[in-house]
Length: 413
Image (cartoon, rainbow, N blue to C red; front, side):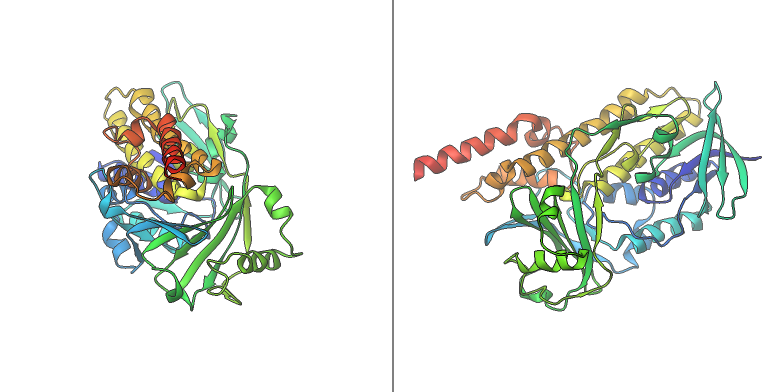
């Protein structure tokens, strides 16, 4: 039976960041990944906060060599009105830029880099069972693509399996998210008319109608990721008998992109993803910790997925190192409380987005420069900065600001 210090499940950003941090501390780490890389996944627009985790994992040099599209902000559009946030103007200290990346390439770069460091990464390998011992060590049964089973003994397990949610499913830890189910219809496009109305160095989010929005994420190779997100009923009433017919009808119906994307060549047939929000009661247990989308995936609107994945694995990796050294770790206070705090901030903004509260704020005239900087910090992923009132008071402050704007507009009218 193979023996490792830490078994990491999943070779995405969450798994590789955690693996790198533990490996750098001198421990034997192995990653098992269900799929073969490269593989397609969404979550293509990163946030500046994740750069700190990528830096600590020693991935930045490898990423920079790829020439990915640098991202300096986020732009919102509604009926011809523009709200543009530049990360350089954010309230919180930290990185002011990041990248927009095709995830198939990006994730493989991270996995290849951690393998070059000396971490074994095995693909097309499925975890079928895990047995935990009383001391937190474990024996994991894995099965390769040929159906051959083997076992790995580990002192600790980091589950960064993303949508696979390996440990939550094996041990019945899954819980329904409080966010309503939504659906995305998306594709990669050959964006030959990019110069018409878009800067490539930011994500653009277009309000299509209340509760329905579009992402526009340009890559450095001339390809642009374009996706529609809304409730299932919206897509049921969208004309078209095939995903491509629906997709092109949606493009034609949206003034902001209709001309630019008219008859655009698609890299692949439009795909769908739906009912992605899920969570779990606990992000840790005796002998394991959950990181990334395994803990909770909210919604793609603010590009929080990779940030929560990398920050959680950055934190978890360092706590696992302490645990392996024999130090006491308060997983509730030092991990779950911290990650839950960040998730809750993003959740407040996601809910405010779909309710229309953020429409009122984003597209208001005469915006307060300080408030703009504080909200910009959240959009940059700095959702743990309690010096920022738009983080600390996230549950109430957005609605208060929107009401103030509405009252001001009424008085001025």
